[in-house]
Image 1 (tube, rainbow, N blue to C red):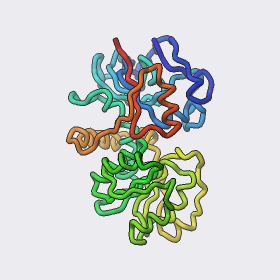
Image 2: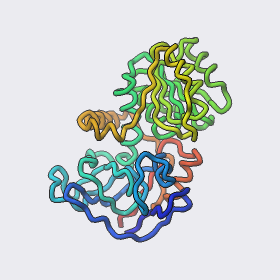
Image 3: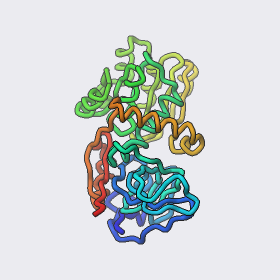
Image 4: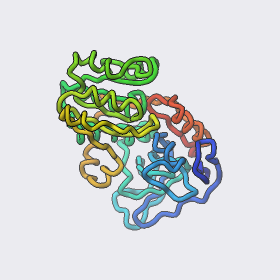
Length: 327
């Protein structure tokens, strides 16, 4: 079968499109014929050996897929051959077929297409867990999203709007910010051209924001923390800006605010019942039309390295998708 393979750690141009053997599944695993695989920022990190999970070489990136179950292990009872599913595989998804632990595989509702299914879990799952479980975002509160035009950021904008918050989207270009506005942001900050701290102060009449969802880190974290309201919640989701910031924690003391880590992958394993409940709630929101994924572009499997390079170059607004020809 065809797959994108990381033979040595490096940038996307080091990946290879090649033939590899089909995976052999264990008793608790399923084999999925992949229809679509999402492009996520962790894919960029994992091929550089910079992610929390470090698979042995060689491996295929791609941690979020949708497709059809081709085989099931002997101990798997809740999934059947031919079933349409989405799955969190961690890696291996940029391939024609992938094996996945059965407890990381979820049925797709009949009316949901493969691209929607493959583009939902990482971004909306992370954003929903952050806003609902960690920040306990309330209607009427103010939410600031840093990196608001990326996958998780745009999901947070849309969910914040649905949850009744006033959403301030911060991104690096006017084009990106207009997409954020179309997904529910009521205020916009171009943090490449504007003073982030002063804009937060201006937009909140000096009060500050109740919740910050930060997928960027780097130089934007400290001014955002300085823009927190009393008893605010700062959600640490990722570091797409490059540098992991070193924050002056006297600010947390002075503002009575909380700095919270958001690691959805671990949450989904540690608290599977709550995670499953969140997924069911997200599916209902998608089916009702209250939230939708913004698809930046679809790529063929052999174009996956370019998709990852576009992610690295911050060209991707919303979600990139690898669409796999199953003919």
